[in-house]
Length: 407
Image (cartoon, rainbow, N blue to C red; front, side, top):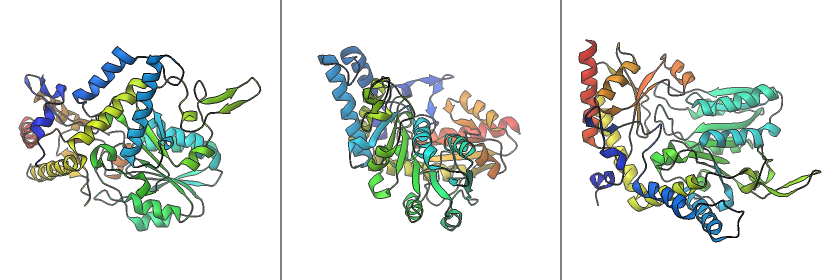
């Protein structure tokens, strides 16, 4: 059965609006996706019917809220194909997940002279936490290079791995280039040296939709709910059970304890020892609803449709005079960054906005990557399964308007 994008779009109320008296064309999905009505309803239902704290009360509201919260954990476990719900920790987003691993796992592991490896295509959130740990512990941050197409060469990665390597953190999908990295091979190579690997899944979770952490064998995997058609302020850190067992939490408070005295605190079991304080209950429930929605529409069909749109967009952009795409990897998700000759990306974004088209402009939280390509900024159009070929055509027409304005 063909993917019915017209039917899908009915599920997203925000897409019905007009911007500057034009139909909204939302192509900023790598920054945040829109939410289907079922996710909005799930959040509203929690606040209107079940609002209570979790894990703390014996009354009915608390038990209902706790049940929904823990059911969402199981949904995430199944979405990621993790072995156990206890391998799923709820956090604020990918950024907090990376910081949790940096502080609770790497802080004790890393010593003076050790090395942490990241790639040249990282989001700042997968650079700064490792810089902080490296500076504190006297370690070095090493960068895996990429080629002009925006791909990691595994031979280059292998050469960087050494007896000093203690940790590797790389994106599954680049948020700027769209490159799909060979994570399974990277993990295998690192594990031969007993080096743990964190995968930044902020873009792979929404674009690949079929993530199997057991097959990838990664040690940690992080993603954000708001990029997966769920609420803001909620994210997930997957970690192997034995690693979570060995880690000390870096945030203390309620619910992450088993027992507290003024002399000693005994921590709760994972995942709870990493979830200090009242969590984002509505966010967790909304994330569970988002996963339900993705299951309902069919992730395989959605991914195939996105790839169809990506191919159409890449072909269409190649015909626009003065436009150069940055990131042309052989294996690529539906994220396209480009520059328009002699036009600053902020001007491109402003003119497109007047046409009702939402894109991202700037360094996209990837200044080192910009420098790798000799740029200061790009325009990024990122596609979701609710976008259409007509919207790609609108983007192309908008870029023609850009050319007319600056020529």
